[in-house]
Structure formats: structure tokens, C-alpha cells
Length: 256
Image 1 (spheres, rainbow, N blue to C red):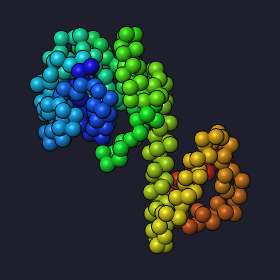
Image 2: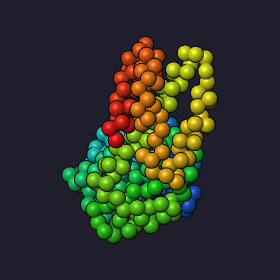
Image 3: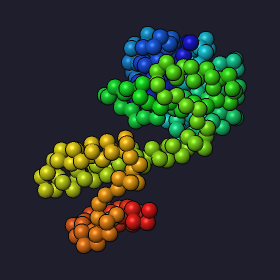
């Protein structure tokens, strides 16, 4: 399959490299920043460009690995030069399939890898769930087959399911990481490294591999230990934002 990658950020970078590794033909890489397009294009044997109106029209698949607010405009731009027979997909978890409906494209879909990406860390693609959808049944099958080349977990996921997955992902990834940052900040005031909590973090995550997280809940809130919670809130008075978060999350645990 001949593929054009539109976007050379974290997702585009790793997805392009992996598709190239499994034998797919990345023929062109677009990025508004020419140096980013050139860097990825060199790795996958493609031609770089920073102009959407110069997108290669000979590809079978156009992967839009761009920010959510740029998906529609990018799709509209490539629709102006394509002949309507090519398939375009985006890689977003939060953006519905319907965003393509008024772009002028006839074939479109979703190719969403459910993972957080950074250029400096190589992902294990075989373990990453790939969420697939398309407006045509034949393209669902095509994307499922392509996904199976890089992941052991490829699923058909519709817009409503994917939207809820994305919300849940914010809780387990973005919010959890913010809590790590809060902990790091609190400990730093007492010259303590976050390393002291890393075994606890690992154990917390490991437990959900074999047990529902609700059943594994521990801590003063679930025990109704008001004295300990009061002491914690006193310690957090100098950090009003953290104080409020502690109260809200503790109440949520107790209510559940």
C-alpha cells in the first residue's frame, strides 16, 4: 500500500516508522515544518513536503496525524487535489468520523492508536490497541488488515465508544500523570525524590492486571479515616489547588 503521512509529530513519527518497518510504502511525508518532514521522510524513504497542495496523488491511503483542530482543514485541502478514490483517515481519539462528511472526500476512516507518544520513547506497537472505523465496510476491513500488521489488538470502535475511551484515557493517563507531578512537587519541598514512590506506583498499576480497580481501592477515604484526611488537608493548606483536588477525589472515592 502506498501511503502519504500528513503530520510528522509524535504520532506521525512513530506510526510512519512502524508502517515502514512492516513493509508499507510511505511515499511522502507532510509537515508544516520542513525540517520535521525531512527528518521522518529520510527514515522511511519518502519525499518531504511542507505544502498540502503538493501532496502526491498516487497514494492509496492518506493518514492525517495532525492536531484535532487541524483535521478538517487538512482533509479539505487534500480533497481538492485527490480524485475521490483514495482513502483518508485520522488518528484522533476525540474527533468523530463525521468530521469528514463535508470535506469532499468519498472514502474516510479512523486509525487511532490508543497510546501516548513521545519522539524520545519507542512504543511497543504490538501491545497498542488500534481503534478502527470507516464510512465504507470495505475500508473497515482494509484498515483492520493494515492494523493487524503492527498491532495484536485491532478493534472496530464506533464514534460513541471511541469518545468514551478517550475520556477514560484522560483519567488514566493525563490526570494520573498530573497526580505524579503533584506528588513530585510536594516531596521536593522536603528534599525527597519521587523515586521513593515509584515502587508504590508500580504495585498500584500491577494490581489492575488481575483485579477490578474498584476492588483494589485503599487509603483513608475508602476507610473513612477522617483524622488522617484532616491531617492531610492541614498539610495542603499552603497549596489550595492541591487541597481542593484532595477533597474532591476523596469525596468521589467515598461516594463510589
